[in-house]
Length: 56
Image (cartoon, rainbow, N blue to C red):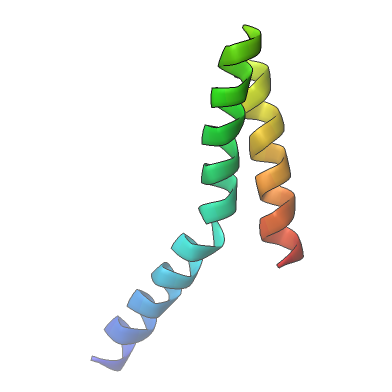
């Protein structure tokens, strides 16, 4: 039971750690679609979100 609880806690931490990357990608894709280049916006937003995850 302890192992299952630890594994669940580890998955929750990893899920919360990746939130800024996912949000940055979505926001960047939205902004990029306005300018006509969704892929570039998603890449830039995901990169910024990943930096936020790493710094925090």
